[in-house]
Amino acid sequence: MIAARRTGSTMGAEVTGIDLSHAMDDATFQQILGMFLEHKVLVFRGQKVTAPQFLAWANRFGRPEPHVLDQFHHADYPDILILSNVVKDGKPVGLADGGTYWHSDYSYLEIPARATTLYSIQVPKLGGDTLFADQVAAYDDLPQAMKGRIDGLVAIHHYGNRDDMDLASRTKAYPPDERQKAERGIAFLHHPLVRRHPLTGRKALYAVSGTSLGIVGMPEDEALALLRELAAHSTQPKYQFKVRYGVGDVVIWDNAAVLHSATLTDPADARTLWRITIKEKERPVA
Ligand SMILES: [Fe+2]
Image 1: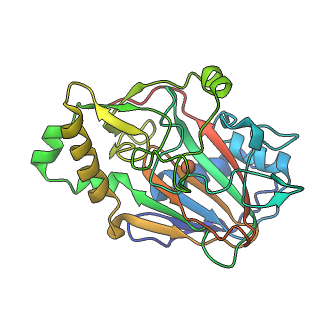
Image 2 (image 1 turned 90 degrees about the horizontal axis):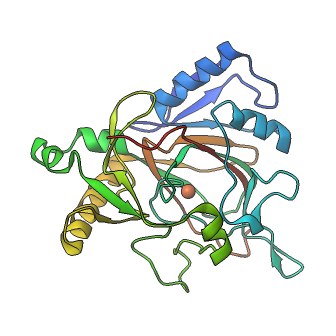
């Protein structure tokens, strides 16, 4: 029997009773989708999947889109991004130190990510956890005056980490080159600051850290102060849920409902995961 056990305070659950290497019938998928929408982050411990099986799992949630950093794609399955700090023959086998700041995946694209799923292959002795922060609960808890102030505001986004533009830093966003930027249409774009979930209809703070650099019609210093105030509120420990990986763990999260952040690892302590990012069908709406 498939069962979800809540492991975080406001979100996050471990799901047991399912082998993700097997094709899933529609009824089973609907059950998993219900759990996903309720808990926002699901963890499936100790799975064993091949690249095509992992892709088949991700495809149930929507259409994957390969990451802009194509040098780190899986050689045979470009929808899979390799996250790794391993260096082989002098070359990194994957993206190291990716996303070590609070963000929502693909919020720098017109059509951002619906869900992101990871499959853990090599687990470091220390670090490498993923932190999540519940943006629905954080929005719900805002004072009415703040909700009135921010409902309807539109944030300006661009690829990067607002709070770390230093390219020598390990917590920057790894920069795409000019070709990659042009191919993906990476530019300044707009998303609602308070976003309505495309499937549940619930409101959440959307990407108030990471790619948000300003607010339409608001002086920059005022906008940044507001975004930082909202980010400080919405990433408080009471909204957080931490995943510590074991080998074979599959995790999936809802980018319209949570922020997430990777944690740094020792470069000598091997960490490798596969990642697939599934796109929304439409632009975010307020
Ligand atoms: Fe991410």
